Length: 260
Image (tube, rainbow, N blue to C red):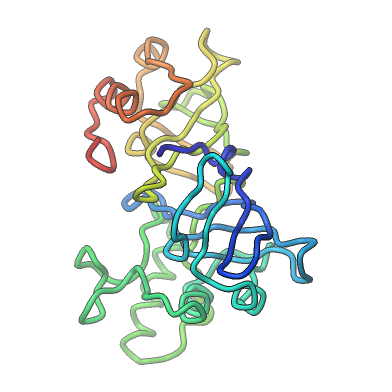
């Protein structure tokens, strides 16, 4: 099933012993993996503490009709979980605390301490700025010296933050990001929905994530490598079936993040 994040935030949470809370946001790693890594849920007013971080690995099933996420965790486990700092990005150290709390494996590692794709164990967030590159180097040095990596932040992308970004194509502003589309079967982010109503006749376009070359948090700009004329003639779809996904990917010359 393919979801816009805006629709996904209508889902409530069901634990093994109770039903509470609603989805508030998702965090994903961009440019490379493009996977939903965390679900941010708002648990107010069910218990004090506000928002909590959940891994998609904790989702046992999704009830589409009831708009309900069934989780493998208990209410107490979620209540006692490490809470997000809404003013700070999710650090690798905080990720470790969250996943360890739920008894889940670190998604960035495989046997032998390497990432699942054979590279070093940190998610791709890029293109990396000089500051981020320096942080990566410091992280690798810390791993070698076995020093704590508490100060190293590995930025994951918030879908809510991303909707404030303007979109530029070859130096020209073409619109703004409206939503993110992901496949709930694989948690793969497939498209970014761009509102081009101020620049083109058509309003919304689903653009494959592979076409996004840079997401700049400083300027809140997203840069795509698409000719404006091609974008004007691009297909638009309100529905998000696999066939529609194939059509959009084919138009842009993409194979799709999940092979569809």
